[in-house]
Image (cartoon, rainbow, N blue to C red; front, side, top):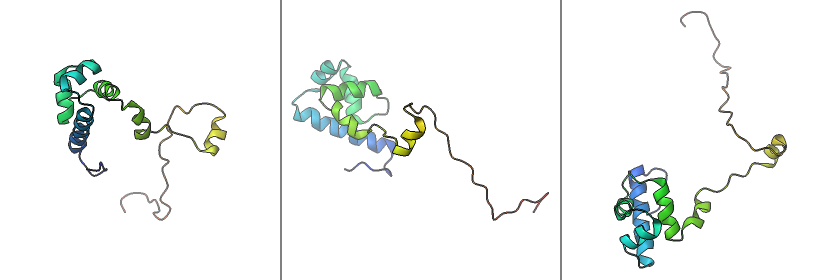
Length: 116
C-alpha cells in the first residue's frame, strides 16, 4: 500500500507497522530479539508492529536503528534548503521563526459604518 495524504493516521501507523514486520522477518529476527537489540520491551515491538497509537517516537527510532533503517530518515524528512534569495536575506544566519501568512485586504468589498 502506498502511503498518501488522504489516509487516516491509524491506517498510516498500521502500514508502517506492517512494513516493520516485513523488514524484521527479512532480517530473520524474532520480536524478542529485535526488542533486545533496540533496547525496548517486546510488548513495545508488538504494539509498534500492530500500528497502535501509543508508540513512542524514541522507540520507533531505536527499532529502525536496530533494523538498519535510520539512514532512510533523510529521505523521509529532507533537510530544508533555503532558496538563494533567502540565503542572501539571512546573511549566513539560521532562520528561527516563521512569519505566518500576511492578511490580504479585500479590495472589492468597501467598508461601511453599521450593518450592510
